[in-house]
Length: 509
Image (cartoon, rainbow, N blue to C red):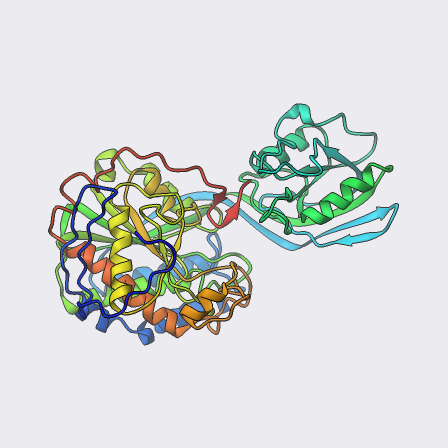
C-alpha cells in the first residue's frame, strides 16, 4: 500500500470517508462511509473509564488478569455485564488450555572451572529443577552460518550419550522449534538444557521463548556471546554449570472467550472485531491488552448509544489465552463449522493501542513493506486505516503479519484481516521519533510484559488517535454496501498463511 512511512496532509475528506482501489488485487472499492459521529462519540475518557476498572480487577487479584486466574474471570464478567447493558447479544465460549507461570527467576552459573554468573531467562513450559552438571555442546556451529539455519538439537541423533552424572545440553537456536530441541534433550537423558542465540545480525541477544508444550527438565536461554564463550570453554575441558528454575504448569486450566454481537446487520456477512482480554501472569496488562479491550468496549457502547444500524453483523470478540499462544482465537476458528466460518467477511484486531512511546503501526495487508501479505481483502483493510490517517495528516508505519496476535488464526483460514498496534518491546528509530514525537532509542513500551504495565503506562494521545482510527475502520466495514464483500475478494480465497517464528507474543524457534 505504501513504501515505508506514509504522511499525506491536506487530503480532502474531513470526515475520513474512505475510497480505495488496490492494483495487486481486483479493483474493488470500499464505500465512502461517514464515521464522524462515532469517532466523536468515542473518547479517551470513556476508554480510560474501562481501563481503571481493569486496573482495579488486577489490584484485587494478585496484580494479574492472566487467563486461568481469578483476575481474568473478573475481567470477563465485567465485559459481559457492560455489553449486556449496552443491548448486545452476549455469549461466551469455554475452553481449556495449558497454564504456565514462572514462580521465581531462573539462575545460571558456571561453578567450575571459573565461577561465573550469566544473564538468563526461563522458557515457557520449562520444568522446575535445580541441576548442577557437565555441559555438553550439541552440534553447535561456531562461527555460526551466514544465514539462520543451525540444526543443533533438531534430531535425536544430535545428542551424544549423556556422561555419567547430571548433564546439561548446550543447544544453539536455529531452524527447528525450541520445543523440539528441549524434548530431544530430555529424551536423550539430559537433566537440563541451555538454548543460546544463533549469532547472526538480529539473533545475538538473550533468547527466550516458548516450548509449546510442557517438558520436565529446566530449559533456559542465553545470549550468543555467552553461549559462544561457554562453548569455547568446553573445548578446553569439562565445564560444570548450575541451572535453577521454578515454574508451574497446569494442564486443563479453564478460561473463556467473550462475544457481543450486534442485533442488526446481515448475519451472512459478519465482521469480527477482536482484542485479547488476558494479561501475562507478571502484570495487570493495562496497555497489553487493556488498551485494546477498553477501546472495543467504548466503540461498542457508543455504537449502541448512537442507535446506528450496521449493514453487516458486527461481532466484538474478547479473546482468552492470547498470551500463551493465541489459544482462544485458535479455538474459536478451529471449532466453527465451515458454513459459519464462511460468514466472517473480515477480522479487525486491536492489540496494544496505548504504548507510552507510541508509533502508529498498521498491519501490512498487501505485503508491500514486509513481504507477508494477508488473504485477499487485507490490502483494502490496510487502506482504510492508511487513508484515514493520511486524511488527518498523521504518519503511519507498517507492521507485519508475523503471527504475534489474534489475527493469526483468521488469516490462516483465508479471512482478510487488519488492525492497529502502537508498539511493544521494539526500539523507536530516529525517523519515528521525528514523525511521532517520541524518544529514539527507547522501547515503544518499556513495561511490556512487566508488572509496571499499569494505569500509568498509557499514552492518552495514542489512545485518542488509534481509538478514532479503530472506530473509523469498524464502522466503515460495518456499513459498506459496495462490491467489497461481494466479488469474492473477501471470501476466503486460496491463501497459504506463512509459518511464523512466533506463538502469540512468544518466539517458538
